[in-house]
Image (cartoon, rainbow, N blue to C red; front, side, top):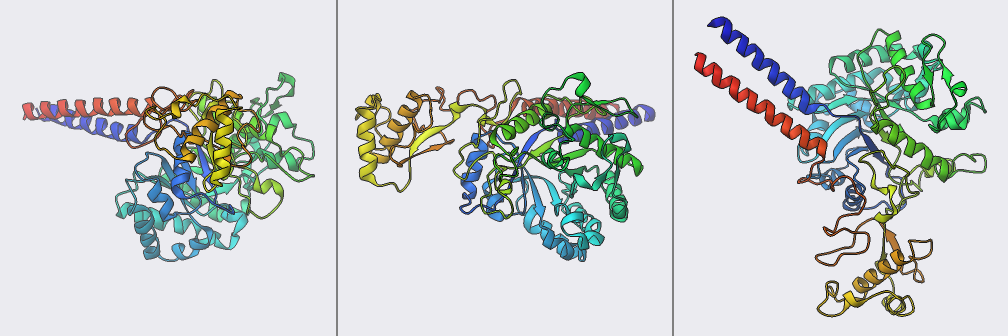
Length: 502
């Protein structure tokens, strides 16, 4: 009897352990970084509205802004927050400072705000090398604070590193970390290993391409298909590489192996391509940016993996959500965003066949609305033109019809402007109306008044996943729900058997 009970208890332990691990595990994802160096930064509620409209389910913040965390509450969006570089020394020198930071910026918001990750600084070795000696201590103090708050199994701690810390990155099998940083990297990797965290890496094939002086082909940097004889071959492993991204990821794995670390996964915290640059940056253009980000998203979500780890994709945060016009540096530094400050796509991502992902891959998800604060007489004149010479069917705006309420010039003009915009095939200039109209990604439909580009439920056409909110779930989350229910049922059965045997 004791042997049976022992076996049952052991099996119960395994089920519980597997159930817990399964709940935390997640397939590779695409997230987006949210920088704030904009001359007119949208309000946090507007940012969250854009995230929902574009089906963005993972974001990384460069701070732990309270207003942003409150706006993200109850959305289900997974959030990586950051400790700015200038706060690392204080945290690394004081356990109580770390505890206070976690209390104010994590515990105060979790679980309403789904914080999953804490990034301690960003590219510390290259941007603030004097902080290096306390970096790992800061990570450990933050981890201890999470343990004290019983959040350590829910939230990972790491620090984003620049890929340029990897030396001799091709062939990947010969890669190693800059050894001057070994006093920091070795304890860092051991910490990541002991906490089941990941090596955060910022990967920018654009910069590798620019610095190569023509050695790296543009197509190789952009994930474009290569002829077999154009692929890069690692002579030591005979692995074939078709893009810079994979080569850098595998170089990171080989560099960790050089330090006897073989079980820490890589998470790409930044990657992207600028859509505009100065005259000496001709390859920073809209077509290349679209090509890189579209191919990157497909590469991650299609579970392509890397030559060293085929089928195992690396989750990646795209840099970035908005163009940051207030950022210092060359023109390219201001133009990495997928959207402008109004939420209008910088370009339409080409994502056919990539599964559920960013919604800006289809122009059916943009609308034309009257500008807030526009001169009402000009708006009325534009409305009269749209419903007259513009040949828009404005019958839905008549009293008693679906779009009559609210009975305001702006509301009626928004309906007419959007109808004309769609009627003209969303061509450039079809949403202007002498400057009183603007394009938006927010669906202006309300009640039974459905705008063109919306389905019968008022949601966007061509979307493949429901809007992210506290009540909706993707097929993956439904799967996890049923899977966890299965585990709970098994636990109940096991407990019943234990009770019977007793």
